[in-house]
Image 1 (cartoon, rainbow, N blue to C red):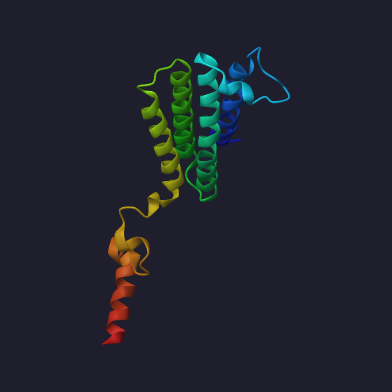
Image 2: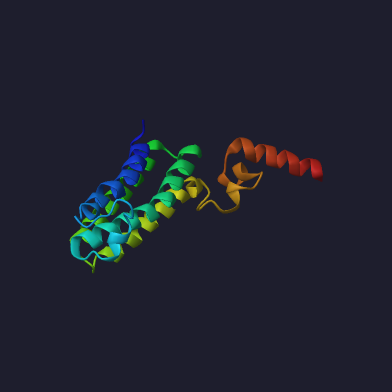
Amino acid sequence: MAVALWCVLAARLLPVLVVFVAKSDPRLDVHNPRDVHALQTGLRKRAYGTHLNGLEAFPLFAAAVIVATLKGVPQSLLDWAAGAWLLVRLGYTAAYLCDLARIRPALWALSVILSVAIFLLPARRYLGTGCAAVCPMKNAFRGHPESLESTASVAERSM
């Protein structure tokens, strides 16, 4: 299985692993397990925050990887991008847990940018080509001799 798909699994499991820190609170009431988080401070509160943020970040990333996979993005490029996203999210999680509030927003923003970039990877073949990407005569614009001949014959017939 592709590295990118393993990254999707890891991205979904990361918030689950982090929440164990918050759930290890002795005040946890299993009948109302979310109530304790309002009373938490320090590391446990930050662990719950990073858990929630991980759950929020996951859908965009997972959708981006699935779209890129279905659209035939080269696997090595997709694997690299998904791995980069996962590393950034691991850094974000560590920054959140260690209360490194100054770098956390930058890591969060970078993870969103990477998710969007992964989503847009299938469009890379159309970027920078202008009309040639969608024009029926695109080969004529790229200077292929066979298309120039057919373009010339079309022009002669129309005269």
